[in-house]
Image 1 (cartoon, helix red, strand yellow):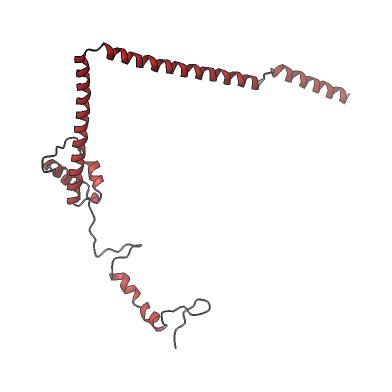
Image 2: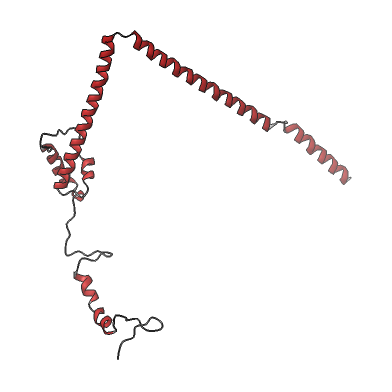
Length: 199
């Protein structure tokens, strides 16, 4: 009787797995998908090449249909655009140099910071290279953000990890100097690294 129960359970398990799992060949499906993707990529590349060829032909056709006057006007327009771009670039370089020079003269720690914080679009550089507007903006920046200026050393403050010059540092080392000098420059002579003082 237990054998019959086991057979019927195993037969039932086999029937349910056959009914619930359809036989799908995943590798074949993957290969089909890859092939379709390769074909689509190849077709897209072909279409891109054809489009570029059509665009080049259209540009040649337009150029051929233009008269000499139209060609000259198109070339003039192109040169004017290049000249305007060169002028903008020259102006930006002059403004940048003027701001950096003025910021350096006013004591900014990092002149690039001053350049970032002021409005350079509204500035015009005169013949001397400096303008009143640059100085006004830098003065306002120094007033509103004094941490951008170089910090002067104050004699009374000593940091925890950076003792001041001279002062406390020199006084702290003076008591060690006589002991170090008595031992001929070698205060640690003991076998365990201990200090041995002459008697």
